[in-house]
Length: 121
Image (cartoon, rainbow, N blue to C red; front, top):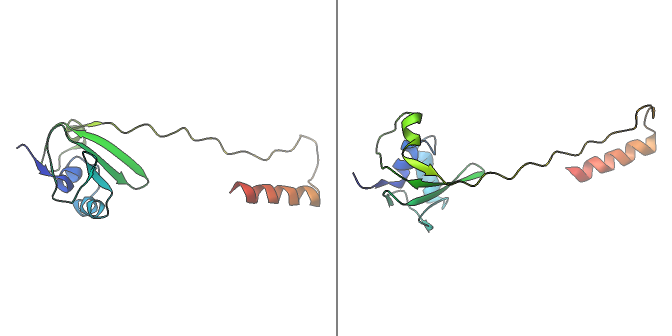
């Protein structure tokens, strides 16, 4: 077997949870094969690079082996090389801190703290 439908392959190697999800991603323009938009029936073969946006993350994988049926997770990993760049490190959220022993915040302090919190998020 030298090629398979991209929607079926994405489902078989567990990039998407269901085949209809993979087909919907293709129709929505979230899947690219060799940097070209892909329809659900676009064929993929070994050596192709598939980029799929799943949820809020874009996965980039290189096809190593073409399969038609869904297989176990351990076997699915051998069918592609993951080229997805690592996510950027998340910056820790700033924490409002008062000096120890400063006592209870005044009304002015609370207003300043509320204003700061509104700006943060």
